[in-house]
Image (cartoon, rainbow, N blue to C red; front, side, top):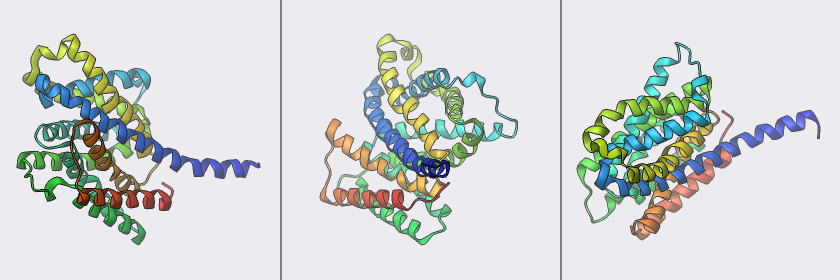
Length: 290
């Protein structure tokens, strides 16, 4: 194989690796959400968010050697905004999860990335996959079911979706300069912002050994692992591709909700899963270079 062949093979492997990283992040973060619900009774959504972010910040800070990062002055505003969007996305999602099912919260939260994917699209084929993903989300959302959802939970999930859109845009910006270290620094900023709310909700109970042991598992699956994988995807995939691929997340949430939380899916919701799967496969096959 010539050097040119090696170069072309490397170019082809990068998008596939980025897609795999994003899928792994979504499975991990949804599984972590099922674990986090067990902490709500003791710590509340706010305290659980603090534990999740703090554990992630410590683990990623060590693994990524975040103390070696030297963000430029031009990067600092985006880095702070990235941390703030990370804090809002996590806090609002957990607060929504306290009152509506995991599948519903995940589907509603996706409104932000889907809107971003639509606004950043320039090709008709991208709009086709986005439309398929949107149809799937409508069919999958429990808003169509007979059981009414808590309006407060719906608004919180939509707010988490808006924060997610900012997280995508700012994450790509800081990731270009800092790489995966941006995740650790952003998580540290997010922890500092949410810390007062967490201590107001749970107080010293956050430091109990049994709580910390559960928080370690939540932090690994909900923060350290998925956000480091997502940073790989954010720096290698176009925003429209990332936004459409993440339509798989409510599917994963619905399946894990059924398996681990006893939630059931209607035939309409399974149709939604099929529509989203088509959008995911279509996007993966037609995604262009970053």
